Image (cartoon, one colour):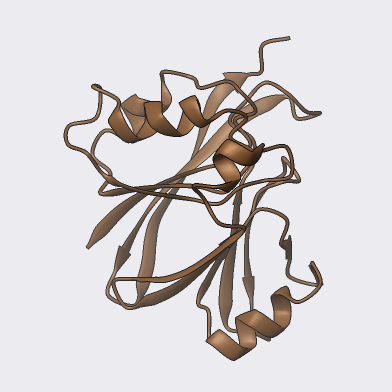
Length: 172
């Protein structure tokens, strides 16, 4: 079983409270729009984490070349027995970005994660037999009012124990 911490759209801001919630996570995934490479480095090496979890991320539309040279536009990987895809601008069931639906079908993706919209969504796509997650935005930039992250577990083929965590209102 793996405990996963999921965040997106930090936009140059990293709330230290994230590490209280991700302290026991085995992996932390960032769905793009870090803002700076320092955000990724802080997450990977934060002393508040009980161990150094595996860190995965994709770049977003605001990310510059330092992030784009280290993180891909899209990731496809297995976590336990679940095939996962992460892409910053990916859409959601019924409104996928171009090419995403085909990739989900061809690769037999079971968990599709996107960011970009700053809208927290967890939706099961029955047609594609795939769970979609967007953790909303953990940063202060954007139109969202409350900063959010998600924590969940993957145990074999099961995605479970999903928790939406509100970090509080964004700082204006």
